[in-house]
Image (cartoon, rainbow, N blue to C red; front, side, top):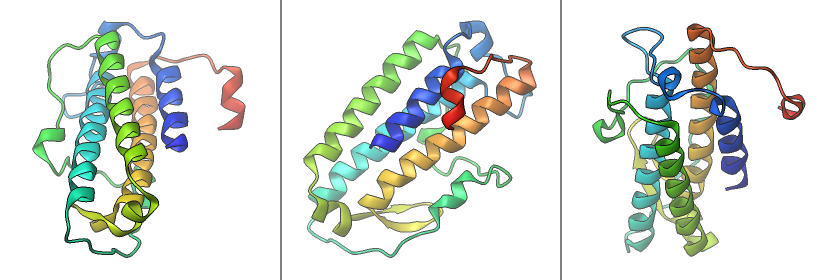
Length: 174
């Protein structure tokens, strides 16, 4: 969970000085706006947390082997959203509303993790559309890697839109 919190802080630093108009601009018709990326992060974190909670309650536990989820960080591999519910809308969004939603989903995710035992994290699993069955423990890592992938997408989108930002002192440790 600490890794996810660190990445979330980086996401906020990346978007904190952008206007609502800027976050809703798309670099091209086939690319997401920063607002859509943030909405996707919210939808994904909330959905994963809800599914993890249900998976931990199931009695049919199955142990899953490690999956190559670090492939998520390879931005040269473009992946279409595999679940329609995780697709962001084209609606205009404010940064404040997205921040509120992401804070809410992050608290919910953290709460679900607090309620799970280490044994449940290791032994309970759920299916991922691309990687197959993964342990809940690996799903926690997946959420962090997924957010890291989209942090890079936010940076690329800023660059494409000409929305440069000044580096701050925290960037040295990245």
